[in-house]
Amino acid sequence: MKIISIVGARPQFIKCASVSRELRKTHQEVLIHTGQHYDPEMSDVFFEELEIPKPDYHLGVGSGPHGKQTGECLAKIEEVLIKEQPDLVLVYGDTNSTLAGGLAAAKLHIPVAHVEAGLRSFDRTMPEEINRVLVDHLSDLLFCPTQTAVDNLRSEGITKGVFLTGDVMVDALEYNKEIARERSKILEKYSLTPGKYLILTVHRPSNTDNPDHMEHIIGAIGDCGLLTLFPVHPRTRKNLISFELWDSMPGNIIPCVPLGYLDMLAAMGSAGKILTDSGGVQKEAYLLSVPCITLRENTEWVETVEAGWNVLVGADREKIGAMVREFLPSGGHPDLFGSGASGSIGELVGEYMNGV
Ligand code: UD1
Ligand code: UDP
Image 1 (spheres, rainbow, N blue to C red):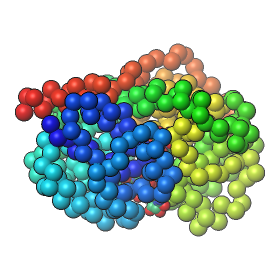
Image 2: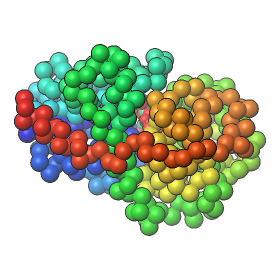
Image 3: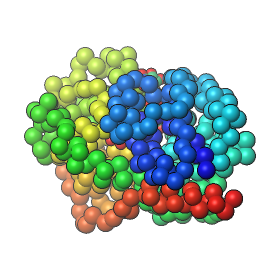
Image 4: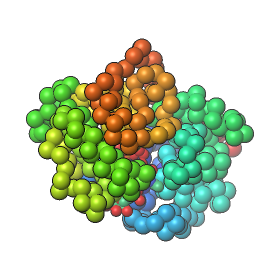
């Protein structure tokens, strides 16, 4: 069976690494990289570290407004699908590359499988929420990381082809945790003492495109005085410079280029707390048992909040400061995301293809 997998952005490279390994045991996989992320530290580093096969097609779409970026992905993916005639298309997560891939395939009547289906923040101002809802409604196979995701789909009338597989980021983390511990020198590089520093990541437009939000976040961390490693997403860097916040960054914040996955895992694993608006980082904080302060008003990963390991603070300077000082997880640490999903995704894809 020929499967086309479509990736384009940082979290998708990480998610596809382990699924791709499984799929290639029994199927032919053709990999498309849309080129949505293209800086070496946003793309190449993940292919190298995670040993992801070289993409068969690199579409070179790059950055742009939503319509242009999604539209270019759509047109170019369609060409490849027509040429390759796959039996199934696999898409990951909720980016513009995900939407374009799902839409191109569905219009050509090619079955679509969605990894990380059913996630909802119920916030339609997030571009990702639009992408998720649309792709879920186009998909034939929906691989859900959590029961909440299954329930979300059911409440939208989607029950066919839905499977609770657990989360593929568990596979990535488990596979690489020990490798990261052995190979990463990130703590030494930035003189970080385990448990005594924070990690900060910010890239959601609701924060990065709002100067007040960025000022509050940076200000709150400056106030707390704790050493904070800040791997800066290119979008964030660009905006911090244009908001004139870059040069006045408080001295306890160490901005650095986006980290490779191994350095990121090592840095997160030994952090005292993690502050983030990322979806994946919220999950990884939980999996690594590090308290997470989420710089958003809502989250799709509600289980981490319910379990008491994640707290939503938006971009409120007072709340961020208070949580950096006071937040301590309460209660236990239940298994929220399963013990690895790639194997079952590989099998379910096989079963589906045999039944078509
Ligand atoms: C995208 C996804 C988001 C995901 C994030 C992961 C959408 C709508 N958003 O957001 O869901 O959480 O990726 O990181 O698909 N840029 C560079 N170099 C790069 C990539 C981006 O300089 O390699 C800059 C460009 O100025 C670009 C901006 O970052 O305009 C935003 O990039 P884009 O891919 O549009 O969205 P992200 O914010 O990265
Ligand atoms: N990540 C990374 N280096 C960084 C920041 C994030 O390797 O500098 C990893 C992180 O560990 C997680 C994934 O990227 O596995 C999350 O991607 P991102 O935050 O870009 O997107 P989101 O998950 O919000 O869609």
